[in-house]
Amino acid sequence: MIKLFLIFLLPLSLYASKILSYNIYDRTDRVDVMITFDTPYEGVIKQNTSDSSILIKLEDASIESTKIKKLSSKYIKSITITPMSGYTQIAAIVPPSINLQASKTSDSYGLRLRFTTAEPAEKSISQPQETEAPLLASLPTKKSDNISQSYYLVITILIIGIVILFYIKKRVSTPQNSKKTSSWLFAQSNNKEQAKPIQPALSDDVSIRFQKSLNEQNSVVMLDFGEQSYLVLMGKNNILLDKFTHNKPTTQDDFESILQSRHQELESFLNSSSEDSKEYLQSYKEKAASVKYRA
Image 1 (tube, rainbow, N blue to C red):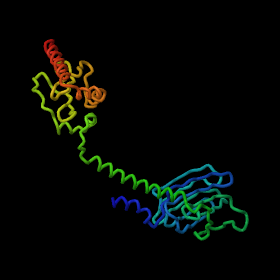
Image 2 (image 1 turned 90 degrees about the vertical axis):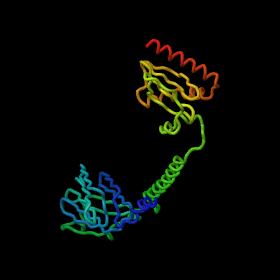
Image 3 (image 1 turned 30 degrees about the vertical axis):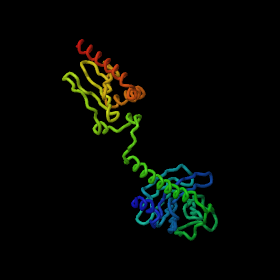
Image 4 (image 1 turned 180 degrees about the vertical axis):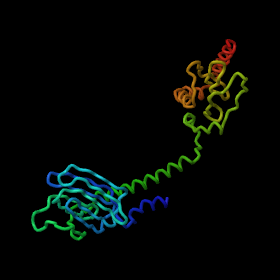
């Protein structure tokens, strides 16, 4: 449990901000690249500009893998985000006379890179230049950021889910002392080994195909005799429930499906009187004898 909490708190203890996502918005007068971080980004942003490309260096920022995006915009042709040692590099292939404006949100969880046409005033760039974070403008955002709220909400839900899972695991592992006749159908398969009723001796021509314990005294058995299979309720009294010739169950799932479809019928047999059980036993003996005679 302690290890799980440490895993949840690990992103908060990392110094470098991790890039969670980036979105590109192609407008008629600009292209905006919106980048979101898992923690407030306080690193230095550096920019190198040439006639055909703009390189942005985000120090103390990381990303899982290289991201490449090609566009058919007049402001930007392609953008590549590459993880480097200690920083993340963003390379944008742009036409000539494209200007870059970088702006962070007020809480530093987001960064906007805006590509527009360069202004013909004194700000025209003739040589590669470098800008740092203090030159960035701030984007107005709400004080309570939705990303931060969602992050802590997810952590809270995960912690609650883990507590619930431990509680369910404890309840399932606790032995159930209640003995309800309606629970035999969904009992675990190892119940057959825990309580087996005393079975009558079977001849060499009779074999058991499937078997399932209902309670401490009764079980349902699928017997193979000759070319037919018989579904028998065995316990204090043996009751023939059904016989199969061509549609015999071949797997354990088929056998479980037959028991589930006869759930109510088996419940009535378990709760029936001893006289009814004798009648079913007599019917089973007659049918078994007739089958053996025909064989």
